[in-house]
Image (cartoon, rainbow, N blue to C red):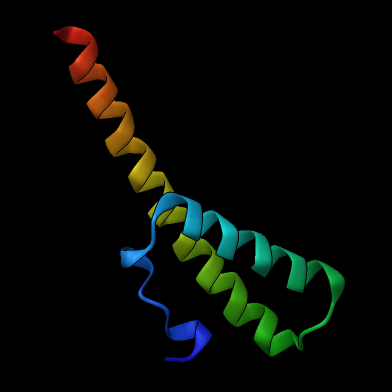
Length: 68
């Protein structure tokens, strides 16, 4: 499976953040082409969405625990 074909939904929060950090590094240091940068940006946005979903679930669980 190519890096851009990663199953983002199967990643833990920590794994997704690591991949996001790697993407930011590649884009910032200019080690990839413009086309690759756009593809990586798209994957990064998907990773951000995934991380936000995980955080929302965690917040909801904490709220439920706090109500007990």
